[in-house]
Image (cartoon, rainbow, N blue to C red; front, top):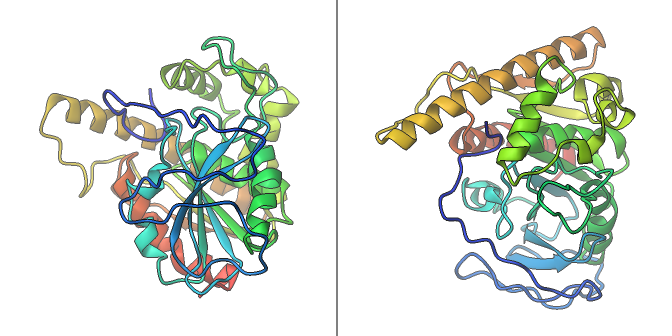
Length: 331
């Protein structure tokens, strides 16, 4: 089972190899023709447009972050979170979708952290012992303390932000927004798993994390029904989402316009994507019912066709675009 996106064959991961003591060091841009970041100046205004790749210190070591700056130097930002198979070299929003083009002329900075495979972008209770992980994941700390500290030096607001993710990142986006209301005004889950304490979900996530990097789910939030597990379940913490601008989406899992398998591996990936999206739909419908019982409004999108794959998430991002820009006053 996989969550987030199809497996890439013969993927060569790059190690950053950067000093954690440095505030920001140059990182070679991964997109042709883009700028390279130097040392972070202390400014009161974000750069007007352009693209950078920077290295931001964290308790996990330096983290690469891809940034597309607001066109007119505004302070609003949208964090884009990856899926379970998040790569170490690039955030997939930057190359699997047209997210950069969608917001190129808007007064909104796109913030795309790199890495975090199988992390659910959370603070783990221990490092994973199955794969010899050197450090304990502390992604919530990074995304809500260390990264905002850096972005503030570049003129990005600490309080006028949105967070959007797919699959693993969708669940995480709601978690981050629920517990950090001073930072996020908008949150979106695309094909997320929003009822992770439901029967069978822990086992499904365990299998997925073993397949994506041999990560041990028990090192993440501990035993079933632990406080940490329940804290990260959107179905459980749903009351904390009241007052947020929310965009929630999951498709039916039936093949759609972007599913055109030709080779055996294509048919396998399509079938896998159908199953994953179907599970997400069940989770998301349960979450919708919970929110309705709490009388908490949200924008929902349930396309009649679509599998667990990037072209559909790119389309959902575009559907959410107006709501994002309105909420963050980022036109």
